[in-house]
Image (cartoon, rainbow, N blue to C red; front, side, top):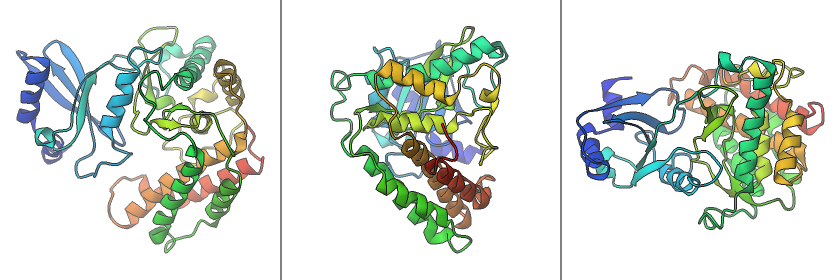
Length: 353
């Protein structure tokens, strides 16, 4: 990371003065940027004897739902005393004079985020099964919460959530196609979008939804058996349709029978190993724990892959316009059509749960 980019992320003197005012003075501190994030920026702060995390949007971004860290702070704070594991929040700031954006501070937890592989301590069938169970059990806990009781009754508009998702991602794709269709077209995505529009469930359960719930947005505590000790990245959280959350989680979960992933750079495959629950087993467990049925499962799984294709196509537009230097983005020329084909296989019943 360049010094120039770091200086755009944080005015260190102003941040230290703010932390001293709100958390107390300390003899020493350290600040470093966490490199793994793909949306909001994460800074690790050692503040005396405390290990803290600061979340802020990328520099130069306008505040929108994709980077709303104060929204993330609100929901994380509301969940502190529930059975959904989240880091304890410390303070939130909307004064851009401090570091140039909204930000909030929370405790830093220890553990593993499972991105590229399983930890060696989980590498046996019993621990693998528990890893999957912990993942879906925690999602069920989120969906069982009484959001009114938590003070989140005005956190979103659950009625019509699923229709708005279809509309929103259709518009995102249209925006991307304005540029990308000069390179190549993806007509299958129009077919998928039309099918989704025609098959939106008339009604759905209402719950708090995470919006980006998957294996690499949770942390497992040190030790065994596997214990999920934190859920991160709540910036897309709202009140909506819990079945959309489940469909999204399943779009990243691999079964041994699956064809090769469409975007291998973003998909881990270790859950194909012996012991990990299958998607059907995860769904059965979610249904048992929530008392809900995963009705219209082809719709929700298709919607998830349609959204992934939308993200990929937006990446491809940014690449074509010269607004990104991520080496993954040009690969979306072929990856997105592959995702479109997968979405069509799901809706036609050719890629069953």
